[in-house]
Amino acid sequence: MYIQETALRKDIKAEKVKLNEAIFGAPFNEGLVHQVITAYMNNARCATKKNKSRSDVSGGGAKPYRQKGTGRARAGTSRSPLWRSGGKTFTGQANFSQKVNKKMYRSAMRCILSEFVRQENLQIVDKLELADHKTKTFLAFSTEHGFDQATYIVDELSVEFFLASRNIHTVMIFDALGIDPYSLYRSKKLVFTKEAIKQIEERLS
Image (tube, rainbow, N blue to C red):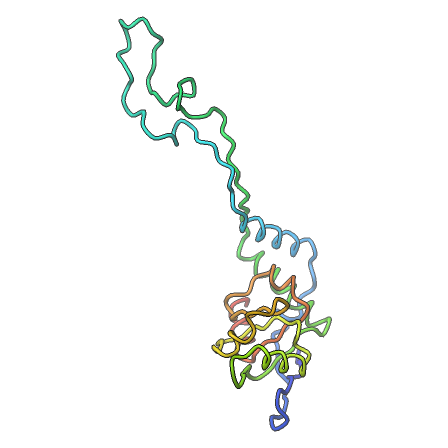
């Protein structure tokens, strides 16, 4: 399959870019995409809830007193849940992590990218360059080409492009190896460089 390149300058002739049909022409699997995005979001959560069990509490390595002859109950450690400063019985420990197989992850990424192609919200450019690092320059550039609410995927990020766009909350920039399904899901439009397309195809093939 082919997609028409977007020319950023009038002196550059736009060409048709060939895309890998297996990656950018995959059918959309809603259940798979939902499962992978949910797992990705859960793995990003911070598990702040954790009570210490007897194995987590410091100390208690030696037997507090001898087994017999003291008149007290037997004790093997001072970190028992029955003792003051001991561990907690049946501790609550939050763990939201979910495993996602590589095959599932790659399939979900292919589904999302293919859906952008079908909805004609994926565009390809030769290079992304700016004259300076001013936000005003970037806004003029993005508005002129209709990229004002786009996610940029580049093979090599220039300093000027990064500095000029970092204060705009509607814009995200990734390198080809740094994209994830959740960021793609949040995007309205994808803008790839030619080299980034090649790297994506190598990564997801």
